[in-house]
Image (cartoon, rainbow, N blue to C red; front, side):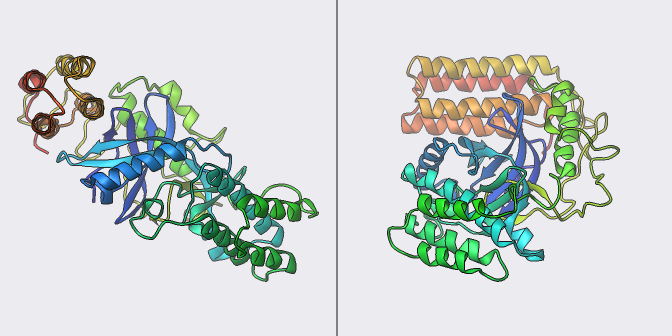
Amino acid sequence: MLGFAAGTPVAGRYLLVERLAASPGAQIWSAFDDVLGRPVAVKFFPAAAGDEHSLMALRARARAAARVSHPHLVGVLDVGEAFTVDGAPTPFVVLSLVEGELLGDRLTGESLSATEAAQVGAQVGQALAALHRRGLTHGEVDAGNVVLTATGAVLLGVVGSAQLGWDTDAATEYDDVRALGLLVESSVREVPPSLAALGVRATRVGQTAADLATAYAALTASSPVPGAIRPRYAANRRRVGLAAVGLAGAVVAAGVGGVTAGALPSLLPAGNEPSGSANAMPESTPRSSAHTVAEGNESPRPTGSTSPTTPGSTAPGQSTSPSASPSGSPSADPAVIKTALGALRDSVTAGRSLGEITADLAQKLDAQVGDLMIDAQLGRPIKGKLQSFRNRVTLGEKTGEITPARATALRAAVDDVDKVTPFRAG
């Protein structure tokens, strides 16, 4: 476990809302980007923590994938490192939040028609072709990495352990094309000759994803059934509603960043906002049906593992007042803490400008300060993270990433924050 919880700030801008999936290699959370005011997915990679080679591979993959833009491919928006409560750095990528139904979930209850399978093949093939044109391969083309959305199939898993070589050998374009053919054939109950022929074609060396996508599209063009394949149910209002309600309670009440109550309706589908509690769902919609899908093949989040908060109320053990503190603990003016943290951030910025801190380390330290600011505004304990900041400065001084003079200035700025911060256990 990474120790993250709903409401945890990441890199000073992404507020975690709900864990969507988890596996030993990754965790996926829905989150809110406080800078751009939009919902996103954040995927953590604990397997890469402390491994410089894996971290470099993750950054390189994320940057390369971010340059690929396609309507049937999940978008890669950001990459960085987050810090757990105990100060351990954990790499992450930020992805577009895709709403719909996993193809794997659909196939557990029913098969696709031949036309629907061809549509999926054409759209996923186009996404693969976009990757291949950039010299990238996927390596995990299967029903667990395809989402059926209101606008067609979307391929997930563009940044995962398969592409980083943690689980398997590097995939080739041939592997992707062959997997596409198998995906389409496995989506129908009885494979018609037209799909079977393309399945054989997908196994031939030299066959490209673009050619196969064109062939699948030709099959759908000759079909009398119009329109794109759709998820069986509308996008899950419950989960999106949970994001809005949770943010209204945890963010708006605390006054974090520029998020306002007026901005929250943009998180909800047009019309039919959830009423009552965040757990409310239409009676006709099964709870296990359509849902918000992020990246990868991780197992789904157990139902009820996250308790939503409603506006004006608090989660157990949490206060919406920034200055509130546990019984017996002194309170502090959040504005004073914010000023002290601002001075700490200014010292980091000055160190980078003067060449006294490397650009890479300055970015990490700035992200840590951003996390501290949000935690302080939410009334959360920050003593542990302050110590983590000190430790990182000391390490940077030893490795030559920070000059001794700047390291001394940073430690003094941390001490100033510490003096105005009340002690809170946790």
